[in-house]
Image 1 (cartoon, rainbow, N blue to C red):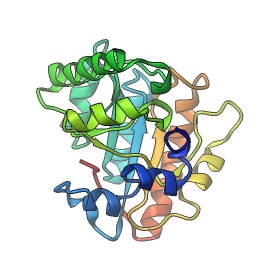
Image 2: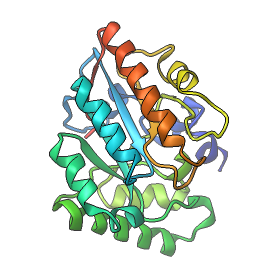
Image 3: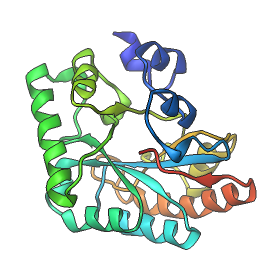
Length: 228
């Protein structure tokens, strides 16, 4: 059980579960992705779509010509499908984060199966296509949910670096420093475009941090690539 809990922060546990953390590992999983470019990194957002946070991220990404992958929550998608359509129209990827943002370890296999079904349906209803990737809330799978993800044909993906942008007492500079301070090609960066499940208005700091991060990535000659 410990490896499921610590997989998001200890690579050895994620690897023991066969869950990728980087673009290189993702490409090695059999995904047919252009994301394996050795000079690229992936920016990913969890918890949206959000009526303010998601457009803010999209505007920053557009200014820099960058691409990102949005791991969305089904209960938010059904409230604002037009935002999912905008994400797709602007060239970004859409992935599943769940229908509800609840810890998998506290849910039964039946509840989890229903969550996957509803989450996938919400995405397909909004944009007419299916998600290929999955990331669980809090980055924590249970034995049952990891198996369900794979049975549904979804590729699990965690991350290799993060900004910890959900915190109440942080700054845009600190978020950017954590996320890209030691960035390497093929890293997968975790950010959040919503404050539904984190500190109020945290997405505002994330948008500011994203500007800093993209400038630093550009200086380092690192492009941004979609996960799937």
